[in-house]
Picture: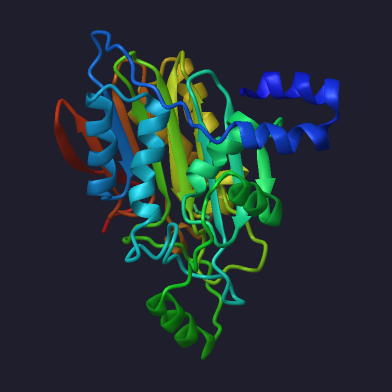
Length: 327
Ligand code: GLY
């Protein structure tokens, strides 16, 4: 059942009553394959997440829709225990709790997000549930977690032994330096164009390591961590969420592309807007990726070391991004 039908039913029958029955009746996820038009599917993602991007790219080649492929792709990192910045295995907040943020946006302009979610690994898939099966765009904390259980997601311990050991080391000094990884990876943002030429995306993260309890970054914020306009293209962000949110970076990039800029030019301008407002850019990283309707891509970052993955025609390329600063 789609959001519009849900709203109508809610208006007719009362939200509380309808919510329970609606969720139960939506347990079947009607994933569909598409009849490919003459479009080469493309998948791009932040950082060197080779397997995640290949998973999405191959799924697109097989006829999967852009939204399904993006969620399938980012799930690889959400489930990767070695990745300490996304999903299960992510670094905890200052109190030792792993809290995850994610959003998705589809080619119709619909979107969903979850913030500060504990005990659920595949939060991008959960964001899709919010988008498709509730009248809302964003659910936080316990509300999102309860929805997940109703939809059949299982509770999992997200703090791994190695993340817990690293946290215990950090506790010895508790030095709070909100410096998001400069050379290493963090958030995975993924943009997919399917065989119909439709674009969708997903963005998922555990956010800043040892963040304040309740802190939410850019990743689940539509327009900041991710934005799609299927007439123009899409953009996704990684890095210091506070700076990305202040400039609504992904929305900005799509609007710059609407004005005629290439994905590369648009990413560069969005990064430069952050640089112009900060005199401490040596202390944090921000990077963007973008894709337009012609299948052109671009990426740009503050610090060298950021790479974008690009899958097209069966080839998964790692593309080192140009940066504002020199190494
Ligand atoms: N970009 C991830 C975060 O700031 O949480």
